[in-house]
Image (cartoon, rainbow, N blue to C red):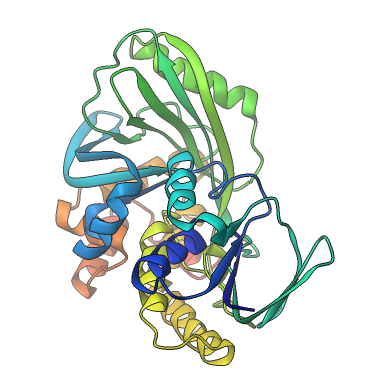
Length: 372
């Protein structure tokens, strides 16, 4: 019998498996993944200031891109922000974890039922363990907005010339909500381009989004030689609700462990991986209770971001939401960094609200804040 079974080989459980193997090499655990690879088909990113120095150190081997600075563009304005930015590709995530974990991983292993101390596989096989951690699933939030995107890893005919990421080009035509293009330069000729929208609807039109990506590349003078990979998603952006109530140990976005406005989840996955790997014992009831406390604490800490989400989705017509983000990026760089890290101070929050009051009509802002 295993001491621990991790169900789902996504980001949260993959990082936890990495930390357990590094810090507790004698621990008997098994990582189960329904698909053919760990991590699926994703790109995860984080700012250097989102994590601790030690977390950044152990995350760096996974990173395919590490840059200093990034560009922000709005109609009539451009800004370069400093600080480091890092991105992980799921192919590298899978490769490195398989090298480290070996036969601790079982791929092509869908799970039918999960209990605190056992799992039943789709094949009918039952596996028992001291504790089971579930890292699968999405976050569900009634009445949410959505951050939806389609991204393509492109090989270009000639070097693109980018030396740092374009984290937000919102100078593009505003369609279906607040829209921007995101670009990561992997090497001289390879670049990830994502077309992203904060929209009221999760519906995606892949044909239209591919065309927008092609248009954005063409406007920069780039000729596309090959589309090497494509990913798409529609992430719920919570406007209110309650913290998830965990009935068994749960990690990842289904436990609410993500940034309510940006959708970034990697910093919280890394922090939880360190927290759990450092526990002296792993027992279902105490681990579930601990994770419930952390989930409630995180939910409370994200309350201001859910307020901002209500204002974003409710205070202005969709095509005017760009004004809110444009005003936000006028703040000092240190405040922007604390926003992404989820560590805004009271003074930061007051500054954000004051600037927002100059952008959004007062009655609209109050109505949106109250959920109307």
